[in-house]
Amino acid sequence: MLKCVQLMAATSNTDRPRSSRWARRRQVSGGTNTHRHVARPEASGAARAVAERLVARVCRPGGRESAQTQRGFALLIVLWILVLLALLVTQLTAAGRVEARIAANLRSGAAAEAAADGAVYEALFHVLDGSVRHWNIGGAPHQVRIANGVVLIRIRSEAGKVNPNTASEALLAALLRNVGADPQSAAAVAAAIINWRTRDLPPQLVVATTAEYRAAGREYGPPGAPFQSLDELGLVLGMTPELLERLIPHLSIYQDSNPVPVAADSIVLKAITEAAGADSDVDLGNTGAAPVVSITAEAREADGSSFIRHAIIRIQPTADGRPYQILAWGTPAS
Image 1 (cartoon, helix red, strand yellow):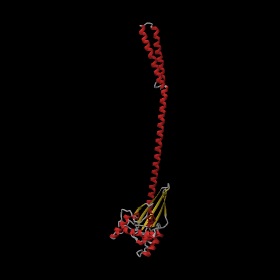
Image 2 (cartoon, one colour):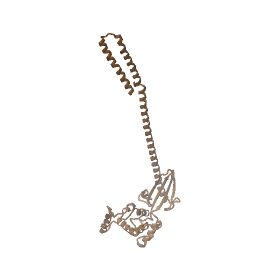
Image 3 (tube, one colour):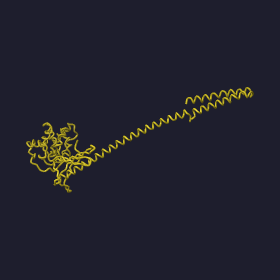
Image 4 (spheres, helix red, strand yellow):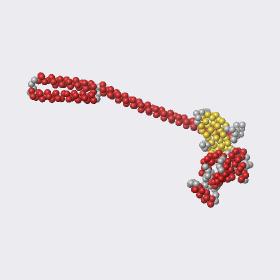
């Protein structure tokens, strides 16, 4: 472009001085000797025409230099557009793969959940079945094959567990000792559990207990009502998360009677034996059939997805004619 500007300037400057000098000379000579001086402006005009053609050839919009420059810019623009399009396609492809993977995981998870739910009802029907297809409570786990995997079913009796809403203080203290609490802490936590669930505590005991909770940084006191869930035990003064984690497998708020020794695990059985010597209210003769069972169904799909359903069911006719009542339906605590 600089070359074009220089050529155009040279063409313009070359012609002007000659034209001016020729005009002055004609005025001085009075128009004489015309033949001698006419050739110069014609030569100058011819030179200018040649220069203009040269400039037009080099610098016109369709010229070689301008065309090459335009083609270079066009190529850069096309390359940048291709790069942007490639990035856009890559991002869309990656996002599509992620969404497809998420959808596949959700589908597999939903299939595993449905399989686990169905296995709970199948186990319940087998427990209620009086034929040879009956499944015993507390027996070996049952395995049921499904379309794309298997379901492992465990049926356990709740009759061998301790109910924190009905158990005596001696039984609670013995159970706490057997899950790892020292005797002093076990006695204190057992007393706190009794105070938590007791409705009509003496006024002076309510004031003293509330003061203990305040001193421990708690903004609440014992409500004087039964526990609605086992997790609520974590609010009791003196109960630690570690102790509660070891205690929960041996508790059930759905077992209305004292724990049945024949259905109890070794820790509960030992606690029953220890409490029997300290508390005459502990009944060791209750060996009746378990009215409440827990059913745990773990479904595993072929792609690795899994789901666990945990249900607590009372095996007894209800007012609407069903032979069972679902007391709890959820997933086991992790």
